[in-house]
Each structure stands twice: as structure tokens, then as C-alpha cells.
Image (cartoon, rainbow, N blue to C red):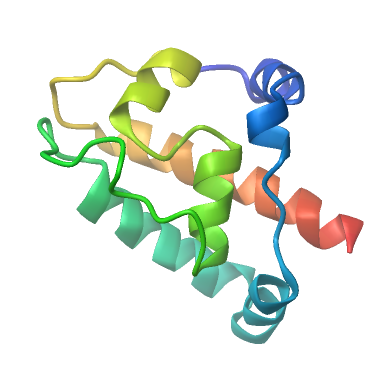
Length: 119
């Protein structure tokens, strides 16, 4: 797991990662449901899509759009176990710990907050 300032500085240098933006539908959903509820969804997505030791469709389990959390996952490299290893130094091949799952939610929260504040 990485220091958030270091992580976001590194992410800001990636053309791919910085290309992800919340569209108007995502922003409306976030404003309607509230950040707290959206982060509850994030916890569920992380637990159900990323936490297992082996994921058959790793690299394809997170849609590119359809929910603000999905966009945030791609923007912050929290979308698959390969990206988690490369960008966050969280090893593949074992289940995520509760602390690692919480860390991912914190990363997503930071990105979502930044996007809300920019709007």
C-alpha cells in the first residue's frame, strides 16, 4: 500500500489514468445518493470483485462506466488485482485483507472527493 500523496502524484503522470472523468450522470448519481452511500457501494464492489485470492476474469471485472465507483477504480488503478499489484504494491494470489480493502476505499474516496470539489 502506498502513501496517498505519492500515489496521486504518480497517477497524475499517467495519460490513461487521468483520462477518466465523471460524466453528468455519474455526478448526478453521486449528488443524489451522497458520498457515504456511494462509498458503501465501493466497499461492496471491492469485497465482491477484488477481494478473492483468484479472480477468473481479472482485468475485466470492473466496467469502465455505469457507476461513479467504477470510473474511480480505473482512474486510481484499483480496478483489478494486476493494477493493485503494479500501482499499490498489493500482491496478487492471496485474498485482500480488511485493511487493504479499507485502503482501496480510502483511495476511491479521495478521488471522488476531488472530482466533486472540482465540479
